[in-house]
Image 1 (tube, rainbow, N blue to C red):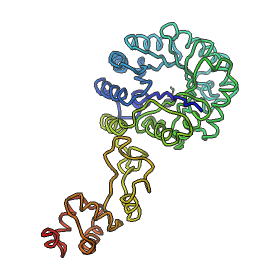
Image 2 (cartoon, rainbow, N blue to C red):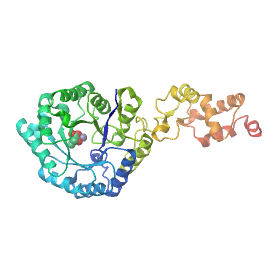
Image 3 (cartoon, helix red, strand yellow):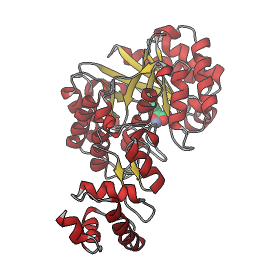
Length: 391
Ligand code: KIV
Ligand code: ZN
């Protein structure tokens, strides 16, 4: 079975930046865009050019410096939006306009005070207009997650007829279950006339914690692009996390789905985005959290010290983290203490370790975590200190 390439569309600088208080200036966006290129993303959604002069400036500046990735600008299905995006993307080597409209009953009725036929016309006209500026036009059917499949298929057909190269199927409210989202993609693959002229894209939000699972179901069922953000940041509960989908595909090679991402750049990119956006990453965040490769219970530590793979499915070096952390707490065992003591310069015999371990436990009961400095203090106050240093 031949491998299929999944395009990684990074929207950290657009959907990700919609997190309250995370506004980035143009310089910060340029720094992140350059790192996204090193990471190997296929598409950088640089912003929503009509939304503010600052965003227009950022999309323009990113278009000028990005060498390999496609640079994309978001628009509504509105002529002025599309003109502004085309202008901002003028210098991009590979420009893409991302235009679209809400398709669910509530969007049609309350947001647009419209009807389903008029929405199809607007979708067609928006894509056609965007095509007059650029070849690569992505269409999004906002709230596709809550749009009836039969109607969604008709909207997609209209977008393809107008020339769309990518059809984005957003689960805007994070509502779908993985099997429902997968079935939606399968339905579109099987029922949209002309689907071979475009690729389907997954754009999943995390309101129920299912964004990553839904995106994976989407590509298993035929989608060929995933829209995601670094650290899963984004409005409300966020978007699909890039690092999660990339490492899932890598860890499950039998799926025969690959990406162009350089995993070694993942951790660095995560730290950079967290720093510039001022958003702290939760310690237990999959792949990039500070505890993702940390082991603190005695049983786990003993296993990891003997062979890392007993409790780790990913080698931290693969994502650019130097090594697994053996964290010393009152739950740690002798193996962990000996390992960490050796790292700070003490080679303990079995008898010495028994003695130092008793001192360690008294110390650890009073502290949440025992650090390198503490290890020196513990050994210095143990009964066997003279023996250890004169060995
Ligand atoms: O979540 C969503 O529907 C979006 C679209 C604007 C693509 O972000
Ligand atoms: Zn979104």
